[in-house]
Length: 364
Ligand code: SF4
Ligand code: SF4
Image (cartoon, rainbow, N blue to C red; front, side, top):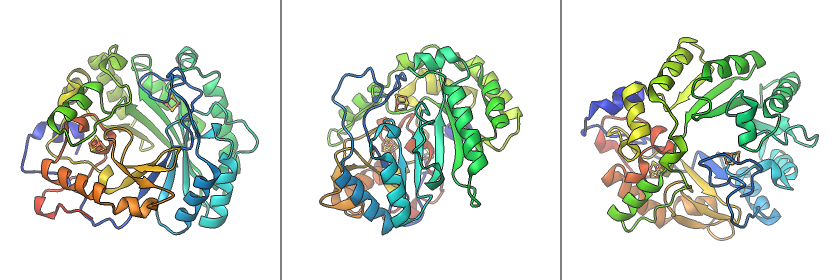
């Protein structure tokens, strides 16, 4: 079912659930560093933001490695540019030795990808965030020769990859006014280079307006946002973008995904009434699937919507945070309310599963 159909159903009797009891997170997102060498609009980590940057200590990295060795979840390094962390190589190599290779997944803008010390073969996947083919658009993000650097890197990784087919290679583009009519060309280029997955992602996240509404309606929830506002997509032409995405779909290429895959009517709501993009058929997937660890070792549900502090690597550890009373209470709130204003446009919301039996909704 495409999200647009679900969005238009208006069936309040249908809710999204995470059906199975989760005894542990599936995914833990790690912020190795809050620094970034790029300047992407809409991102709170962009280098032009003025706030003190930090990076995770060796002690916290060691605790993460121990936790990985005892668990089934994987780590996703994103938020900030992980390759800027001075211990990146040590962290990936030591994790592979103690917890097995392929358990760490990297998202990077690729600017530093030609460094010789990066242990690509120990990573489970690499997602290169590269928004378009236009060098001026990359320069506007503060990145030089991005397409050439990533192309060379991808070819080298593919030539040297191991028998298990790892690392898997993704290329992802955030859809922006600057690339809205070049997406077919983008997909064709990266298919030719040989990447396994191409993701076209609508610029998403909790907006300033949605965060304010959440605070107003649910004062017990400390809502946050990452500076995303409607100005960031003001140049999107919905009709033009819809036509371009239709051509992308016509390539009929399973390696391409559009996230969320919405077509014209829903697209229009998504870009023009951002706080109203709430489907009755979904509920947050993050609260039942993932956690985030920030540079100082503190553990949260999500840096993108609510400031829900669940403990630290030093005290509670990842499993303690997962089973904490604070997270349980938040799941209870979502179980009753199904969605908060900040869920509009949130990736946690689009990633949730659909289920038609509300009585199966349960906490872990
Ligand atoms: S490369 Fe990623 S982390 Fe850095 S500013 Fe751009 S979107 Fe943010
Ligand atoms: S869907 Fe989940 S992660 Fe996203 S805003 Fe709602 S509660 Fe937060």
